[in-house]
Length: 295
Ligand SMILES: Nc1nc2c(ncn2[C@@H]2O[C@H](COP(=O)(O)OP(=O)(O)O)[C@@H](O)[C@H]2O)c(=O)[nH]1
Ligand SMILES: [Mg+2]
View 1 (cartoon, rainbow, N blue to C red):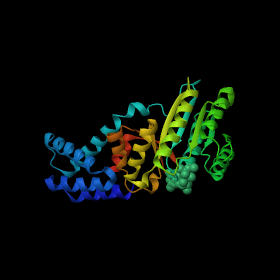
View 2 (tube, helix red, strand yellow):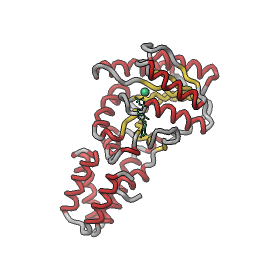
View 3 (cartoon, helix red, strand yellow):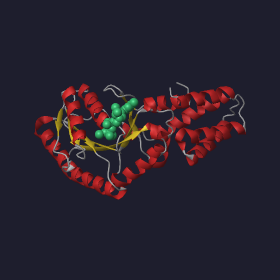
View 4 (cartoon, rainbow, N blue to C red):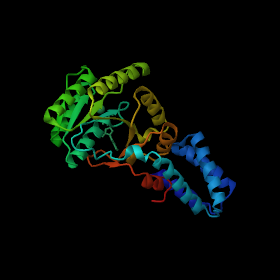
């Protein structure tokens, strides 16, 4: 449990009567917890009305209702996260991992390859971060360790062409799942958006009959900035979901609720460390309960 959950737990432990000041302080706390002011007010307003209707008189009851309310918000999006791990046999799946530098894309690509392999999939890693030679080498090292094939071109090459080749390799019997690592770093935002659109267009045109998925990797410790990143990437390519990394070192996590509410983007996986097994399918109930310090 992160220290932010501890704070919420403590807060509800100290308050025992349901008063307007409880709701006021809770709003401030949610803002601090990366909810953003608008989201915090909206959530607390709904919560206040709910508690009034249900005649809740103890703080503990407010906490339980908050957890349920948050869970409900996430469950609305559940539909789109169903089957993140199980893809119908015979269908090629292409996963494009997007995100800014340092969020954990390459690590996540390796973790996913390991996960899917244990689900009897045959993944191929595509080194579509062609920006630095070191990025390509990093993915190759993971591939060797995991015994997973890596499709790579030279540094400075066209990222879309790497994915293209990986799709050909898969279709000629080399695999049934492509996990593409990308760069996500450009001198300007508009250059990044153009590059993203280009990769997306090319992969889309080659992906007929395949299940093409775009997941944005976000670092949980960056707080509200993660939402800004999500807006940029979502505008450029229409994302299918988010993978939240470094949850082990994050104290907060309220941004997950803003992603759901503001952008209708579900979190599909959570990264909880640097090792291969440190990735877990997102569990809305558990996450919401942990967030308020109930789990
Ligand atoms: N603690 C922690 N560190 C992570 C996690 N995911 C990635 N990292 C670390 O974050 C750093 C950047 O990761 P990398 O995959 O190279 O990011 P990229 O630039 O997006 O490809 C590395 O030191 C990783 O070990 C995670 O879930 N938890
Ligand atoms: Mg990388």
